[in-house]
Each structure stands twice: as C-alpha cells, then as structure tokens.
Amino acid sequence: ELKASMVAHTNFAHFPVVQYFAPGMYAREIRLPAGSIAIGKIHKHAHLNVISVGRGVFITDAGRVAFQAPHTFVSAPGTMRAVQADTDVVWTTFHATDAMGTPDEMKDLLTVERFEDVPAMGHNSGEAAQ
Image 1 (cartoon, rainbow, N blue to C red):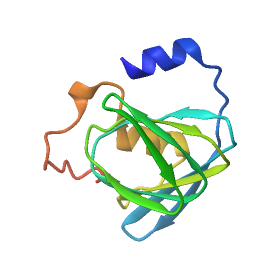
Image 2: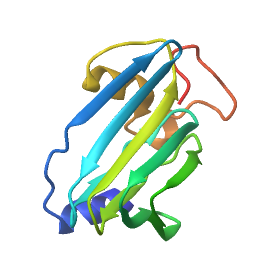
Image 3: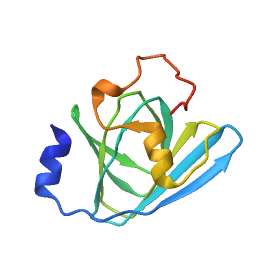
C-alpha cells in the first residue's frame, strides 16, 4: 500500500492548512516547502484541485505523474495521493459544501480512513460534496 510504504521511508512535518469559506464552497490551501512530501487523505467525493505555485510529482497507486503550476484537475471519489515537492508548492482543494469548521473538523467531514468507506460513486449523502 502506498501510504504504508511512504510512511516507513519518510520523515514528515506538519503542514498548516489555510481555510476559505464561501456560500456553498470550502477551500483548503497547503503550502509545501521544496523537498517535502505530503500524503493526502482518501476523499469521499469529487473535488477540484489547483496547483498555483511550484513543481513536483503526484504519487498514487497507479504511479507517478509530474506537475507544474499552473495545474488544475478533478479528483475522483476514493482518490488518495502523495505529493513530492521539487520546489515550493501551493496546493488548494475546492469542495462543494455549506459546512464550516476547524481544519480537522472539515477533514473529518470530507475524507475517510479506509477506501471501503467511500460513498458509492454518484451518491451524495448531503454532508458535503468533494
């Protein structure tokens, strides 16, 4: 498994999250210093991603994909990826929800710990769309 392998071979720092709220939308921004690696969570719903600054590599179970800002893409439900930042990177995710909370509360609302807990494709529980 990707996460277990990376955790076993990497020293991780905590990367603070900057939150933005607008009617019907929530955004999470993370700033990764050059040389760092961040492992994302398993997302319940599709959501938009914008790399506004930087260059690096996305790592998933499907392989490695290089990226360079500006780069915008959609993550499918059940997606989990790691990012290796070659330069300083600013990565923002956008989620359709009216919920508000702390970064940890929002993470708990929008993600799951296990792939089997991802809602069925196309199913919207009403909690949040991501």
